[in-house]
Image (cartoon, rainbow, N blue to C red; front, side):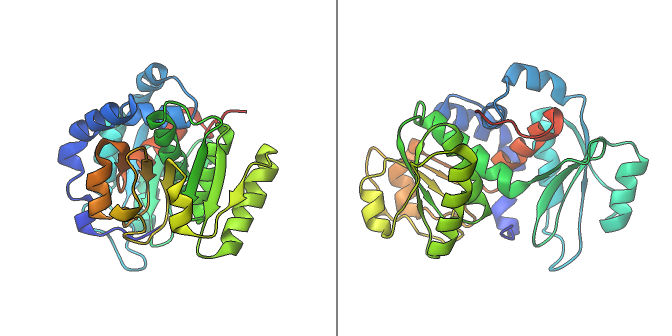
Length: 284
C-alpha cells in the first residue's frame, strides 16, 4: 500500500455526495454502483443489506504511525455507503480486541504495508490493493460502455495493476501490460492468462507508443506524471487508482470527464461490498 498523506484525504469526507454524483455523470453509476459492478452484484440489493453490517475501523500506530484523519475518513465512506461504521476508541491490539468484544461484524485496519478488511465471522480478508484494482477496472468498463473485445493498456504491474488486469480479463478485454520491470509484467501475464485461459494478453515496451493506440487505460503506477498532456488523445478514457496519480495536472484537465481518480473512495467501497456479500465475485 502506498502511504497516503493527510492532504490526499482531507477533502474526502465533506465531498462524498458530490463525488458520487460526479462518478455517476462519468460512468452512469454511483460510488456504490461501481463497487457493485466490480463484484458483479445488484446495487439495489446490496444497498438494502449494507445497513446490517457493523464495521469497526481500527487505527494502527505501527511503522510511521497514524495518518491524520485516515480512520475517520474510512468510517465516513462506509457510513455514506450505508454501513454502520465506527472508529475504535483504542488503537492496535486494543482496538482489535474492542471490535471482537463489541460484536462488530468486521474490522478495517491499515499499516505501512497493507490495508485490509477482515470479516470476523468468516475470516475472509479483502486487501485494498485488490479491491482498488477491481474497482477502477469496473469504472473503466463503465466509461467505455463495455470493455469486451476492446484493447486496454494497464500501466503498472504491482498488486493494484495485477488485480485490475485480472478484472479486465474477466470482462473479456484484450489486455496489454507495461511496467518498467518487465519481469513484473511477465508474472501478471502468466498469472492472468492461466486463470482466464486467454492468449490475448501482450506486453508493451514503450509508453509513448503504447498510449498512441490505446483508447482505454488503467494507470496503476505510483509514479506522478506518467501520462502527460502530450500523450493524451481526445478519445482516451483513463481510470487511475495510483497514488500519487500518474496523470499529470495538464493531462487531467484535458481528459476532464473521461478520467476517474481518487485516493480512497472506490477501493473502500469495493472492500465494503465484499464484506456484505463474501468473496468478491467476478464473471466467468
